[in-house]
Amino acid sequence: MSSVAIDLDNPYILLTPGPLSTSPTVRAAMLRDWCTWDDDYNQGIVNPIRERLVTLASGAEPTAFTAVLMQGSGTFSVESTLGTLLPRDGRLLVLANGAYGDRLAKIAVTLGIDHVVHDSGELAPPDLTRLDATLAADRHISHVVCVHCETTTGMLNPLADICRIVKGHGRLMLVDSMSGFGGIPLDVATLGIDALVSSANKCIQGVPGFGFVVVRRDVIAAAAGRARSLSLDLFDQWREMEKSGGKWRYTSPTHTVRAFAQALAELDAEGGVAARHARFSENQRRLVEGMQRLGFACVLPRPLHSPIITGFRSPTAARYEFRAFYEALKSRGFVIYPGKVTGIESFRIGTIGHVFPADIDRLITAVEASIDW
Ligand SMILES: *Cc1c(COP(=O)(O)O)cnc(C)c1O
Image (tube, rainbow, N blue to C red):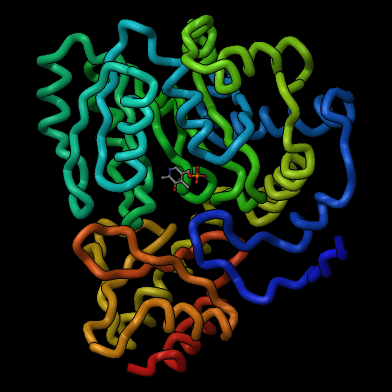
């Protein structure tokens, strides 16, 4: 087999919600090998990452929480969390308003978890009155799960309001904050979140290969023997990491983990989550303003937007075709994302990753040059 040419320069930036564009230094951090059971790796890299994730998630009450890393993409960590934390006699309420909410429900179906789904549709936030009434009426619901930023549309769900209702009824609160954590400030202790799931290749700007769960210590400690899967047993992974100084049960993605440690250091150097949130927000503000100037309309009303990703309606011109538009932008150095909203022709542009307001200004110029309909 002939060798594959290595091109260290990215030919385009990824305006996609993960994997996303990473810094050259995050990519360079992968250029050495690590032993998966050696202390250099586990005590030197894995445990400091776990500790940093806890303090990132909860400045208010860090000792009540622990962080567990899990191999695979983000969905593996969500499946691991639901499959391990839900007791056999538990019942899960799923708040869904997009593809990722639907995926939570699909995991429950696949794992045989008793569940109910509140689907508010892709264009509406969750129905909080219905949530409150359902929790009051159904004592069997033990856990509620929601998506923080619904990447399907870019909608930022009202996490604080949802948590307040769920905690008011004394139920456990699980959050898929895959595309929000690290880019949107939050405190799991203050909000009352029992487990929060995210992954390496979203707002923390690492490369893909693992996800992580920040979970209350008492909640994970109570979950022994509940897992519906061997490799995705979150309790067992946590116990091994605690017992063996950060060791994963099975082969860990060492290079990805080392890159993630670099990404966390770069998050701190940028000024933490607040500074990153400000950059993403400025990216998104310029994006919407520029696209609207060029005649594009957003899928969602402005108050429902997140700084993470934004959906735009496809132009109605007969000659418009997503694939040609996509290729034209790609040749100018930008990769965008197809739309995912049912019944609306759209495309999406992400504003997270190693992407800066000046990149968004260049994108708008490229969009203008790519319009040929
Ligand atoms: C990216 C993402 C996931 C996980 O997707 P993977 O492809 O498994 O990494 C889950 N939920 C949300 C909201 C996401 O944005």
